[in-house]
Length: 269
Image (tube, rainbow, N blue to C red; front, side, top):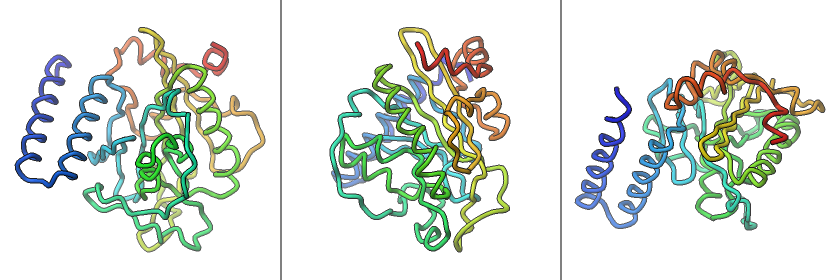
């Protein structure tokens, strides 16, 4: 569909959702749905959501995800991390909750119990300490994936901290992250939650009209190697996952950025 027709259609859809909400829902549910409609329009406007291979996109207030029912987890989680959001608070760590917004039903947190794997955040709780609701949203089961403890607390944690550093340095970045879900041979729990053998994280920064992009791909093992050794092109991650991460970027921009694996260009701007 021609891009010029997409945004008006989304606007009409959002207005219809809000009208239906006002007629049929109580006040708290209306406010929540209206917020999601606003986010849908914003994400459509900035054109930074990946494609969904499952068609099951869930819009939370502070991040968006595409849920893979066969894998009982998100194939990707996408959000913006701004410099202002780094001014965090200290909240009591809550229990994990089943995500009520996943239409096919999100996995139960009990799948992870005694599995030998951490409930690994995709959108880190540490990226969402600026607001209590934002923080609590990261403890929904749609936002976790089975991760080995030494990987989760090791090199994956190092990358998460580095992303916060870059968000501060570059006044915000767009983040897309998930496990590579192309092998279901290893799984945990009664619902057979897939254990990814690899995890990726893609960062996009826009300064004025110019974009810069970097992709990371990690095997699920702890490593003392430098983060730069895990930089790959976004093209490589797309081939592994079947996901088109930035379909609305102009092809000339997208093709150039997604073919690059230049850590130095990203890290030392």
